Amino acid sequence: MINLGDVEAAARRIDGRVRRTPLIEAEPGRWFKLEYLQHAGSFKTRGMMNKILSSTVPAAGIVAASGGNAGLAAAYAARELGVPAEVFVPVTAPAVKVAKLGKLGAKVVQVGNEYAEAYAAAMERTGALFFHAYDDPAMVAGNGTLGLEIADVSDTVLVAVGGGGLVAGVIAALRDRARIVAVEPATSQALHTAMKAGRPVDVPVSGIAADSLGARRVGDIAFELATAAGIDSILVDDDAIIHARRKLWDDYRIVVEHGTAAAYAALTSGVYRPAPGERVTVLLCGANTNPADLG
Image (tube, rainbow, N blue to C red; front, side, top):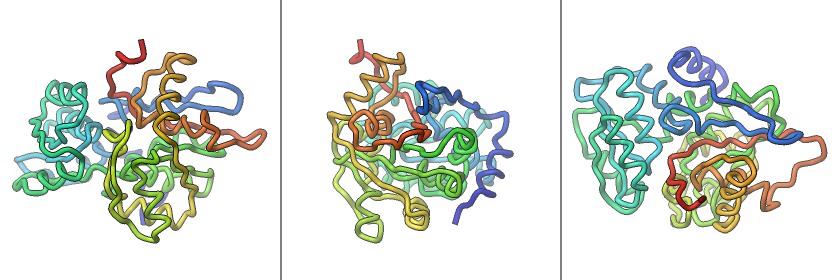
C-alpha cells in the first residue's frame, strides 16, 4: 500500500521539476490549492514526472491513454526529460486538450468515445512503456506530493475523483492528518459505487465532467486506500458542477474545467457542510478547458 514515505520520496525525486502551486485562503477557513497552475495544467504532471524518473524507459518512449489531462502531463514530462511520447485519447476529448498535446510534441491517436476505449487501444501498442493514467504506484505517489503542500492548513480536503489517482495520493499523504472527502459526479461515480459494492466495478459514464472524471472503473490502488482509510464519498449533479465552475469565475476569476469544479460544488451545493471553525481545502486540480462559455 502506498504510504507517506512513498510520497515523500516522490517529492524529493521531482523537486525542481514541478511547481509548488499557490495555496490561498479564499475566505476565512476556506482554502484553494491552485494546482491547475501546474505544468501542463493539472496535478497529473507530478505523477507522470515521478513515473518517468523512477522507470527504465525504452528507446520507443512511453505510451499513455487519457481523457486529456494525463496525456498532457505525459507529453510535458516526456518532452522535459527527452523521451518520446504517444497518447491515446477518445474522440470526445476536448479540442483544447488535443491541440495542446500536439504542441507538447506527443503523437496523438484518437479512438473510441470514452477513456476505457482509448485505454484498450493503447494497451495494444508494443515496444513503449505503458503509463496508466491513475492506477500506478509511482503515479499515485507523485500526485500525493501536493498533499504535503496543504497539510498545515487542512482539517478537511475536498478532492474531485475520476479514476482515483489524485485521491489515492492525497490519502497516502494525509490520512493521519486530515479528513479526506471524495467528490464525484452523480453520472460518473466509479469510487462511490465501488465502496458500496465492496470492490471496483464498471459504472456508466456520462455528464458534463466525463472528459476528466469519466473513468469507467476506479483504480485498485485508490479503492484499497479509500477503503482502508474509510474516507467519505459524496456525489454532486451536473447543475451543481456548472454552477460551481461559474462561481469560481465570477467570485475569484478562476478558470477551471468542469471536473475540477466538482470538488467546489460539494460546498456551493451544500452537499458538504463544514463544521464551525473547520478548515477546508478545495483542490482545484486542472484547467485544461475552453473558457469561452464563461464570458
